[in-house]
Structure formats: C-alpha cells, structure tokens
Length: 70
Figure 1 (cartoon, rainbow, N blue to C red):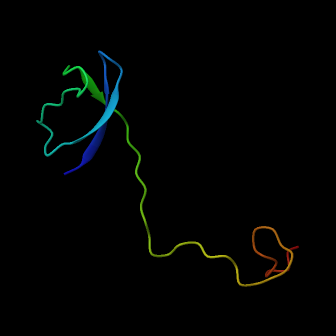
Figure 2 (cartoon, helix red, strand yellow):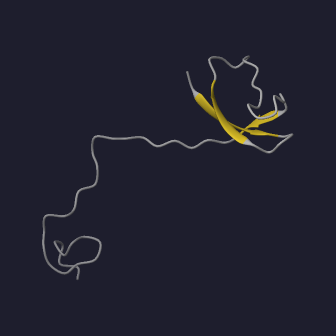
C-alpha cells in the first residue's frame, strides 16, 4: 500500500495516509473534512552503488588529483 501526503483544504493540516486503492475516500484526521488534496510527494531510492571517496590522495578538486588536471 502506498503512503500519500495530504493537505486539508478546510483546516490546512498536513497528514499522511496509507491508501489501498485510488477509490479510497480520505478524510482529515483533525477535522474529518473530506476536502483534502494530495500533495506532490518525493521519494528517495537506496542503491547498491553509493559514491565512495577517491582512494587517490593529493590536492585535487572534484577528481581527487588523480587525473593530473590540477
């Protein structure tokens, strides 16, 4: 089930809700109003290939000095 973020148009409260399907009615937990709008949510992904510090030591900006551009 996806988690969506909502903002209540009546009381302006923001909340999250598990929604099993698109036809599910959503109401504000603070004022029970069904006048809510779904916010644009961003998400992050964890990947196996994370950036690692360069093993090359020395002076060097973005490349760590390994390419002799500095």
